[in-house]
Length: 169
Image (cartoon, rainbow, N blue to C red; front, side):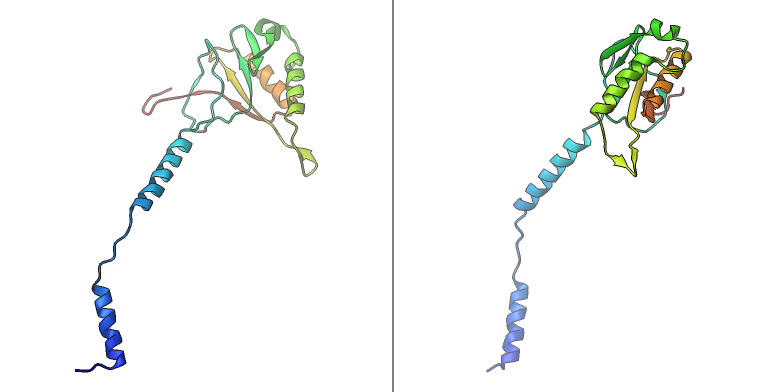
């Protein structure tokens, strides 16, 4: 029996469709392993602010994460900017002005180091993290906040300790 050309083509396609196709999954496994490793490494990268000895941060339910910026720490005895002592707490409490000049000078010098381009003719508002003990007097905290804002650090964040799920303030 002789088949026409179109019949032979149909028979050939039927035979080809019955063949099993194998997929090499080794390369797929490699790609997924690399992807999982990349995600694990990058998921564990967390921006943290420096920890200071003997500071107990206030508790909060805030979910926002801290960014790495200039850190102003208020300990029991001194005010620090990125681990450098600026002035003592007693000295700061005795100041009768709204702002602290020593702190303002250090923040201004830091601002020059972190100089950013102008946006629409105005300098970009800089970020600062304030790390203070939960027992820090409000009067001192208010002076530090005012000093930071006057020094063009308009985005002020207060460092807090996140509460566990189900805990209350």
